[in-house]
Length: 450
Image (cartoon, rainbow, N blue to C red; front, side, top):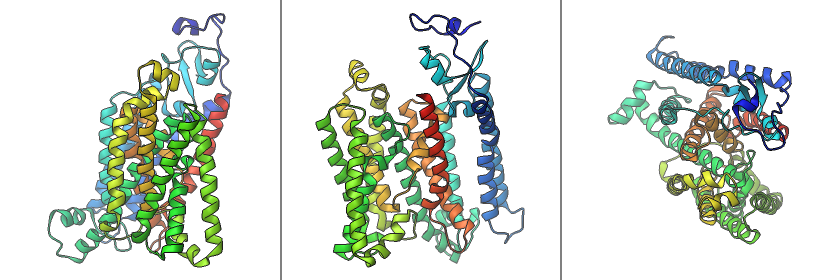
């Protein structure tokens, strides 16, 4: 059997079989498949170690976390094995490889260079609704653990009791005070995950994240101005200004993109230019006033902080509105991902889809940045992880990316508090440590595809 028997080759190039990839990518794909279950296993062990020993090493909390982690690891292994039998494991998908019957492993980039239709070979995830449901359960479970872990640890039954009953003990009061932080983490993770998926589709750039559009810089400059000119020093005071700055930059990017027409390079180019100008202005203000720099430093690192939920009402409402717009725009993103000309030929309103998507990104990324500060790489990690789980249908990809973002931010917050107890490592630093290597891997894969 040859490749021409499976998929039609382009005219003038019949029966041309692309060369197999080098040994390195194939070995790397196998390593990813082997190490992939280690990620949830490590998360489970870290969470179990974060649970206190007050009630013995086999207390109910650790049993619950251990069983949940074991089920998650087994499910991930099952999905990976099933995909591998169909020709493309998760590791192979991450590195752009596919197994062709009769030929063995081939690179998708090499297949496309040979002008061969690879759609028949790419593995399409099944039961995507079930995967999304599992992600929802994981978000709830990690959220309960995030509430339980802190300077004073509490047990999971106490967390449940604090929400179902009246606060009568000191632990109940502690839980009620930690709940707003967890709610903000879930909302910000949902926002940045969904925004990252939309930005990557809008720009047709797998390395894009909300910061590419200049949104983070807009929130940053507005925060600096609020501190320097308004004398505001706490997140409760300058959160609204950061959101307004992000929305203003979003509107500016939309207006400038409209003047450049429907080109792929327009949005990244405008976003980079706006980011440079706003970043320079913020840096100049910080250099001129050391007091502003001291107040601004904590927010700029990126992370979650304790505080009443009323402090974050405006960002939470903005995130809710942005998520609704993102879900409504998700079907049109499928056509837009094929390019503006193809989307127009399919009957899609490209201008409406682009403006709606950018507005959703502005609300989501702006509100998340206002509440937590700039969290680098979260908008990059979540969409790529979601694509490996549910595929590229944006009707499922956008919700899945949002849920992956919520899980990632919750887990980063828990790790930051558990590792440096009684102090904490901001979630922004955790994402920098994890996201930078991933960005390099994705960049190498993108350059190899060319």
